[in-house]
Length: 273
Image (cartoon, rainbow, N blue to C red; front, side, top):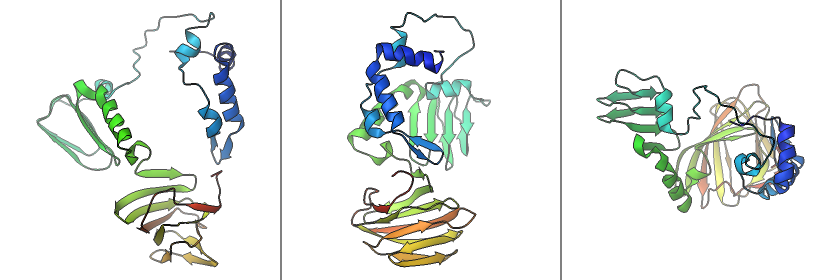
């Protein structure tokens, strides 16, 4: 473990990796305030050399000392390590979430969004999330990088986004999708607003299930309450706002020839986007 003050580290970084420090300072200097976040300049940060603390500074500095520490430290670097520190039942299983295990021993089973049942397994790891499910023997947990590489090579969306995506105004979650349609659950925080926007390839039908929505549709502005809906044809400028004091929940059905998130033309944007 490395310990130092930020100022002292930056002094050494400037000495040994000045290009890295210049890029990071430029990225920070060009950052944009986004509610509780500071979003760094993507272009400036992309120029930063790729290097680790170890190689950039610690292997070169003359002002470091090494002190032994006996603290039972573990960085929990694998699923097996998580099983080792977990609370095991009589069969040696670490179970988290809605899990049923039968004749299974020494397993780590994590369920985040649905029931997971395991029968007759020994020394396995099962991790279930809304995005994907991982099943592997504990001896092979480090090989999960091979799956990540396959996701990259096949350009799967799971590698870049979650099923539930957070935005400064709230979040949206994919409920169902197929060719030419997609269903989303949208949550808009009180007082928040999406940008004024338009789509070239899709139309949208929104149904309010909780709260109050103010919808700008072309020149028209309408207020919708629970169980009311609005249809936004392809090519029409629109904006969604939550004028209320409780979260706004909607179900949105998109239909069209292309449903990607990059089919958004923003005319008046917030949050630095």
